[in-house]
Image (cartoon, rainbow, N blue to C red; front, side, top):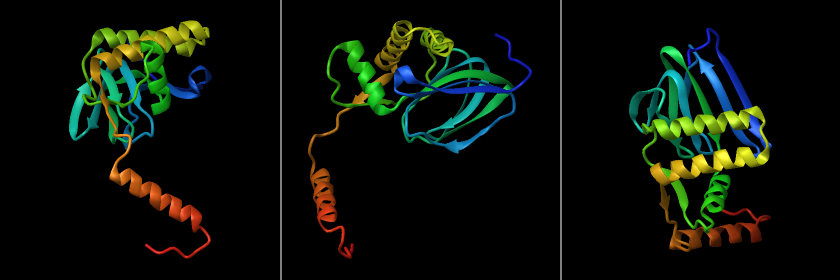
Length: 192
């Protein structure tokens, strides 16, 4: 798919996915400064190439490469060569866990994570583009859910990992006690 001669971006929130942020864009000169999101950043390049720094590595990515960025991870992005066209979604942690539980039919008692960041996977990149186009077209809920749920579950199965968080730790208990103390003494001049 050749790039258009103009930059464009379409940003929307998809109500079928609890107002998940979605983006489809073509950038010829636009550069992202280093930044992070509170959500996952999941996407793929459709055409052209992007140069991004992620976890200290600077890479040029193109069609067939995925963007799998955990919440809070600092990254940037700039056009490579003649620019790039890409599609992204930004699911929050709860939505992503809900999708994994829905697809597997099992409770997910962990924190999903992507350690690779920018893996090459043409099959899943193409599946992601198809699911994203379905969302963007405003297709019905069943078609949209099926496409995006399936591709996100497949991406997680192939490139994700689950971080088990202990239910109760000394640190967690100490924070809970400190929080309770502050709530009970909110009207006092509490020191460190």
